[in-house]
View 1 (cartoon, rainbow, N blue to C red):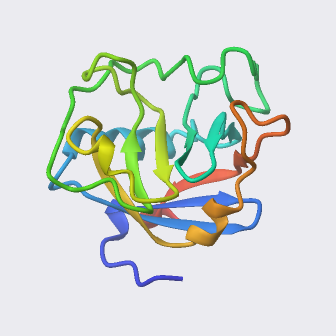
View 2: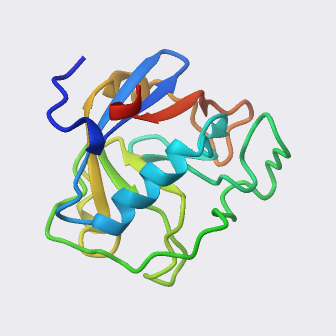
Amino acid sequence: MAEIKDPENTILIELKDGTVTIELLPDVAPQHCERIKELARAGAYDNVAFHRVIDGFMAQTGDVRHANMEKDYNPGRAGTGGSDLPDLPAEFSRIPHDRGTLGAARSANPNSANSQFFISFSDNHFLNGQYTVYGRVISGMEHVDAITRGEPPANPDRMISMKVAADA
């Protein structure tokens, strides 16, 4: 487990193989960091599927409307929803989409990010300046690497739980 410097800005995601620790970047993308913490504290991410997992690219999750595997899971709609909160404006920065970065998933509209996010399996610099980076994995990347692949996966993995480290 990595040293947690700022528990209020650290996310703990429990996966089937172990805990993924993500250091948020509130100085870079304050609205995105507040959103993920708000939804995590509400339990909205618990049991949400990884609905789009592309080998060598990224693992996407966070559709709290259609991808909760314990409540109204809809594999055909997973990845099309968000939360009941308003969409967020883009918070683009010069931070590159390197392996282990947390990026905001969105539609073609740069200001459409809501609850969905992705974790990069590799350096995805072609995304730089087009998607908000708001965190990075500081431990447990091997658990992200073990997430079942597919678009969507036949038997998707899920986030068992997500918590803000200050609350854990």
